[in-house]
Length: 69
Image (cartoon, rainbow, N blue to C red; front, top):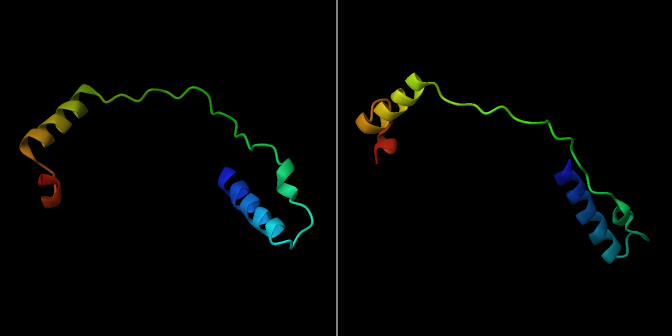
């Protein structure tokens, strides 16, 4: 939403500068605030998942040719 508001504000500022509108109606816009979703749960890897990742790094198993470089 903030990006859309910003785009509209920029458009109206330009229209106002070019004298195509009498008033920049976006000057009075309040900042858009999205509600926070609350505390996010920490996601941790299991021990076996960590070992799989470490093995892949040390042996290169499962990596593409580009990832080997």
